[in-house]
Image (cartoon, rainbow, N blue to C red; front, side, top):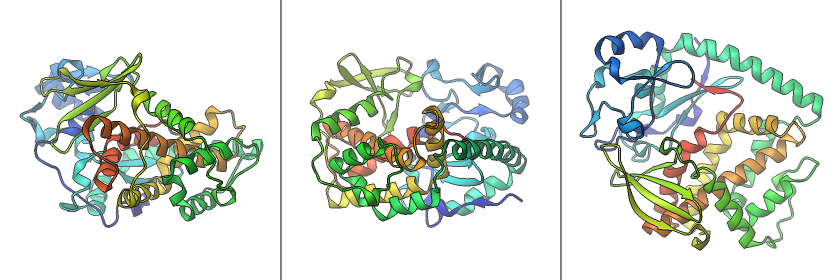
Length: 367
């Protein structure tokens, strides 16, 4: 039996909300052992994917799963493993940890089944796949640590996380985020505790940086790569940046994109959470700070930068960019929909953001 870290799930519950269908927008892979059923019963619903395997087709190549009708699954009893596992993610780094996709509205209600118990059941059915993934990811992590040590950029993840946790409120203030980003550019290792926060950062520069971080994820011409926000009314909202506009679309159940509104991104001012919104934000930052997948994405960034930057600096810089992206999304949602910057508004921004956060490139891999 593999030792899996379930600490990120404790105290949480999950439920599947009727009429939502958010997970049905995530094109599920068909595992080798599942292909026989689909070849026999639904061969036209199988499409090749980029990894050489098969996935389930989407309506008009961009909408929901072809088996979703009336926001209900036509093959629920035979749905793929991916669908059964959502909103749980199992990340393989130098260990396996269970994480929750907070873009699922069903993890915010406080109702349903115990998340840890459900994840343990899912994991018990996937031991072989997890064992194989862990062996591969451990080898990659060991190589990564060796390269970091040789390059002189190795840090202590536990100490870095403790430093962030002790200063988590700093990441909720846009001007402090700007100062963290500036400190992260230093050549020597930097801690959040060691930054002299003077409140002198340029607010307009911070707004621009946050806007650019968000727009980079909205600039694809392929609807499959655009971020999706499932609203409280279960509307599937997509946002595309093109030229000097951001356009808001509603994805219909039939797989069509209907334009709702458009705005100039330069007109969106970066909002600041109120006291209740700040609490929701800092709670979420605590989740990011504890996620093994977030650490894996930091490691990927270090590799991408050629092992020239200290681990501490890349870590706090990556977290600051994540918050900047989230706050600009909150500001965009407020501009389009009036969601605000209280607890509800920040929660909606997290629902909009977290799936993309989990999709970030990583040294390890989700199973």
